[in-house]
Image 1 (cartoon, rainbow, N blue to C red):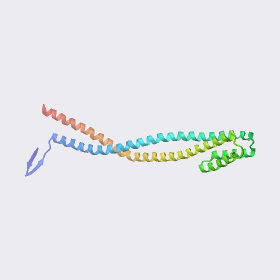
Image 2: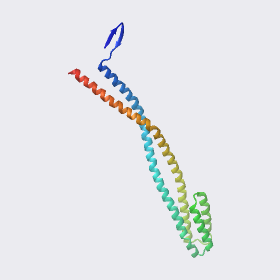
Image 3: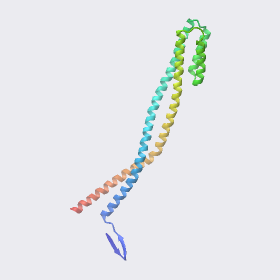
Image 4: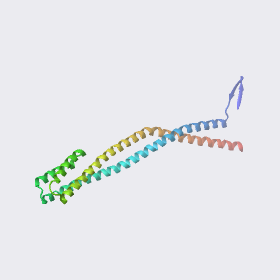
Length: 210
């Protein structure tokens, strides 16, 4: 509807036009916020999945670390328990004691290179004289213990990477969360407003058609 006054045209919006304008405004705002929300929600979900996946892998790694630690200690202990048989095969007590000291030292070392140096001296001592079943058993257990330690060291590196990845995902999630929550509320608010105004428009139509 248009009213004329002093040659100036003034547009007057009736009730139906006002409702249409309000619906249009809410639709535009909903489209704007919904676009940003969906894009952010995709990243939000990705960060959340990343955290869960990393936690799961981390738990598996920690379990493997415990297994390897226990396995390494058991192998060195089993090798140590077999040493007495070397005396039965003719090895000097002092040489057996030296090997025992080196086994105790090797299994306490955290450095793979230092451990290999100590183990090399053990294997060298075992190579003196005739080869026996006891020597072969000790050698096999010590070499397996070293292999377990090597895997353990490599897994520590993986664990460190997983920890860094989890922290990165958590930081990104923390940054995105406030905006994500705000957008979610705005989208819901405009949806509810639209529902209200559209129901009002439909009610107006029903009145005018009666």
